Amino acid sequence: MYTLFLRTLLATSIFLPISSVLQAATDQELTQLRAQIISMQQQLEAQATALREMSARIEPLVSKSQTKTTTRSKAPSPQAAPQSNSRTAAANVSENSPVIKEAPVSKSTETVYQEQHALFNRKFSLDTGLSYSYSDRRDLFLNGFLALDAIFLGNISVDSIKAETLTLDFTGRYSPTNRLQFDINIPFLKRKTTFSSVGAGFSSSSVTEASVTANELGDISAGVFYRLIPESYERADTVISLRVKAPTGKEPYGIKFLTINDGGQNLNVPTQLPTGNGVWAATAGISFIKTVDPAILYTNFAYTFNFEDKFSDISSDPTLKQAGEINLGNQLSLGGGMAFALSEKLSLSLGYTHQLSERSSVNVEGSSSQDINGSDARSGVVNFGVTYGFADNLALQVGLGLGVTPDAPDVRIGFNLPYSF
Image (cartoon, rainbow, N blue to C red):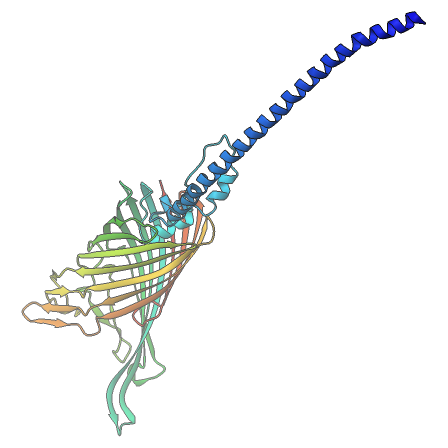
């Protein structure tokens, strides 16, 4: 019993110091762990504060970048205009992929610029066009007198002129810089005009008809375009142009008229049809275009000066040859409209063009200058267009023009295939 008591006392004396040492070690480790936790919490709070500061600095930069992107989307040239879905595309790019700041412009937008303005981001381009125009004009001629202010005594004839023109033209463009462009246009014309007259020989049922055709080269023209003011958020893209047209087509002067033998001798038709104006001409123009998402607004003004020229024969009488000088009336053209890029490949356009032509004059050799009555004209056409881009360098343009004035063609349909190199 005494031995057991001694053993217990000895074990207790040994265990208590060891327990105290273990307890002290545990408290020290716990204190260190708590200190580490507090340090990590402080680091997390510092990192959170740094993240908030960085976010606050990034937000103005993002807003400024978005403003620049919006401005670029309204840039003057389509080559610098970003797509509306560029930010969506950028969100899908992986972190390791390079960031594309400006997406390429859609082909539909490019063709709108090329058709209504000028496109400077394509080094070379070739535009092949095919157009058809039709006009039908009817005139009532009275040869007699009015009796008792109610009864007409004399010859009444109704003349009709139906003109059809098919034009195949090639336009080559070259842009050495992003502000300068040169082009040349070569047209080939196929014309057919049908002349008819009703009322020959005092008969209301008598109709005389004759047709004349022509297949020749038209007037070749060359032009230069210069971007005066690039488009910005406040300003429209401004381009000035100068075009010179050469009289390479068949001139309308000296063409002889023959009388159709119909009993009434009331229908005269030309032996040939002209395919050009016959004189040199220079056209100065200015055009504006502005992107107002999702529309593209455009307007243009041009003035054409026709140079006077002398011809060895300007008479339409087959028995007479008469030299003289022709002074064609100058022309003022203005137009405007809008286009909508419905997608990357498809766009629609709506516009109106109006042309004012001054009266022409003729100076027969040996006499004074005389104005040609009825030579002035007012031509207004409403234009509708659809553009579809097949690829990055090829598109199809389809246009429809409807004349709204008597001097304008009744209808015009055109197809263009602009191809860029």
